[in-house]
Length: 183
Image (cartoon, rainbow, N blue to C red; front, side, top):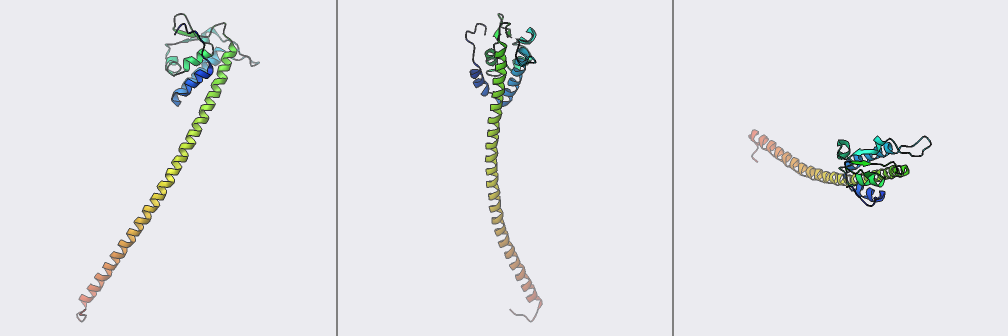
């Protein structure tokens, strides 16, 4: 995409990144964070500076890049928002010598906030799913209890019927054994 005229914003890129599958989102954001950390590391005093040219140049067709950042919607856009540009051949994304290292640092901060936000959203979704599952479990337990009560009632009726038959058979057997009983 050589010749892109306007630089995207972190907000635009973050909005696109949010729409990815959670696993893709995680691997992409982890890779972007590593890229930004290497491209513009902090000095001991906390101020960012541009890293080695080697760390500021990314092969677009490299396996690690193409399977994570390149394959995830919004990944390349986020790097562009941090100051990366296409080289003239279009094969590399480069953070130029003239780039502001504070922009890359800002990108890391935005990325951290985005990951936190997504984790919180995932926790809320998990809590809602757990609440629904707990409600469903309670409903199933109630149904099981009703079925057990109905089964117990049916079983008790059957048990009493069998007992009456046994008593009738005993009575009949006793009557047949006694030759004087003409009932």
